Image (cartoon, rainbow, N blue to C red; front, side, top):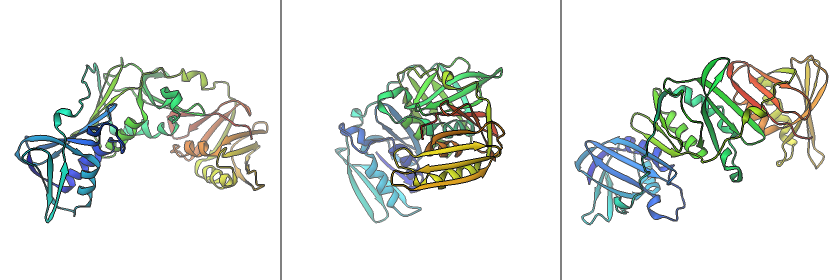
Length: 372
């Protein structure tokens, strides 16, 4: 194998694939990136056995071939090379070392045979459709904050994607919850997605997908089965196993009888929550909202007798109500709201609260109250 490529192209592709590679691996080959040179391209592949990514960089290939070498080391080398550098990669005669040269810099990295590199079994992906990068970005950004990190309830460790209906219109819906808050976001159902099964895309796959979306404006091809999902970009392809579990019936936690509406300026409300929560304990982050005609008083206390309160003007004309929330969760939700007005639809101090975005009818959030 022998090739030359631009540093910028190689760095972009390595940046995409190296973040899939775990820093600590009991299986040495999983620390490596698979490099394959052929037909004017350098193909780079990385996997952790649950997630695999392939990206391609343009290259001047003088000798075709393939090998694997430590992903993070190669990435760090290329990252530290000067802008505009031409990077040459070549295999030693026995194939045991990868020679990396750029200008006067030279590196020799250990290699493992490409035959040992695991391939994620293909399998049929019968459902295929195209979705715009902006739509997919919105689905991810407005839901992933609510994905659970609790490994015991593994079926909550991802975003639930499925076809749904809202007011008679077919939608592609993303839902995430950790049991304390829930995010549900809709976008019009793409052509070809009508019969898709409900699938749970794992947290790590969502994170890697979000990085790839950042660099594209075009449509992304999504292909899936009951066990796998694949996202294809211009040069990059991300394939992930799906979480093998049943996502809970989220409809049951979305309240329908809430009758008290509070509207607040999103920025003013979020900044007040942030200020008042400064004194709340790191563990509970509890904050109390006291609602009355046209105003909300936010208050927090800590065990060492610190306290804080702030009054803001809101639109509220129902009976007085006091309710407690985790301030971190409140801030996470208000950070997703694009409109000037955040709408809180409440029932009482112990029932879930609905939060809506005045500028986005397709986004809905549910927040469980806490005792304060």
